Length: 331
Ligand code: UT7
Image (cartoon, rainbow, N blue to C red; front, top):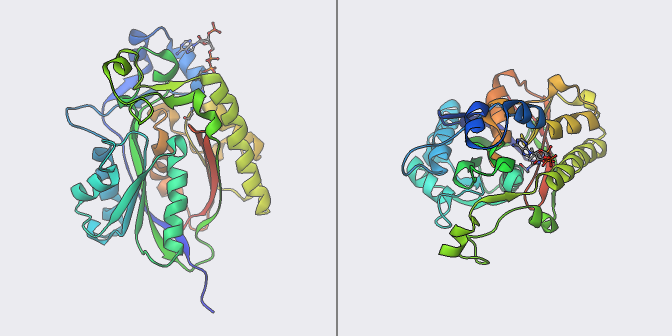
């Protein structure tokens, strides 16, 4: 009998733009204070992708190049590229399509997956299924967002948390039961749409002078209802994932949470009984990069991870979409 194939993460890459937008910068742009932003969100600065003609795919490319370099493979060896994003370069072709061309990933197919802040978790789950099917050997899963392209920098409720970035992981088949993506719980509730969405640019409200005048191409967020749903959703699903696998906080090496608000992250850690020093946190430097937050944490913590470490990846975002994934680190 052959061992079950799992999808193991075998390399990580990341990219954050050089340009910084600090709380002091925001104090000059909207009616806010560094003190308010730090205490209510945990964010101190974010990175912004600047430059004419620069788009989400321009962050995907260096993240995937780094991952290929680390693993010693060529982009032409990639079978499939999945990009979790809500800020694609354009509606079509997909960001994955454009990035494959820029990378020289000539043997890959791919697609974008829109699940807002849960985009990486949804994409990781799909990528893992492609590997588990036995049909693909190298699937790259990316979370990437150029949030600065859809943020209204006169709206203090949204501009204070979001930033730009991209993170990527390589998935390969493993028969080692002690490594790979072991279990996941993913949820969706489109009833949450009124609280977090972009009103125009889709088939409901195609672009027009009116949609531009009414600022309908920006991310719209009602902070409080999203906050309340996020605290409950992210904590509940993480708890459920542990409980159904007979795990406790003591078994977990790291919580890898979506970085939307430090208070949401703390609530999730408390609910699963995890001390805060086992929580990856880079919200203070990168803000909320939407689909990129979780892979950017893996990118930054990679050198501290050990084979067999149990990681819980958890996210909540627009949709509503949310979920948690149990990963056993493979290297
Ligand atoms: O990424 C995935 C999805 N997104 C999230 O998970 C985000 C979830 N929501 C949040 O993180 C928080 O709701 C925010 C950070 C967006 C807002 O924090 P909050 O503690 O929920 O603030 P609030 O909206 O309840 O506003 C509290 C007060 C209000 O003033 P009054 O009515 O009490 O006088 C706001 O007008 O703070 C005011 N306020 C601000 N003050 C200074 C709102 N934004 C700001 C600001 N600076 N930037």
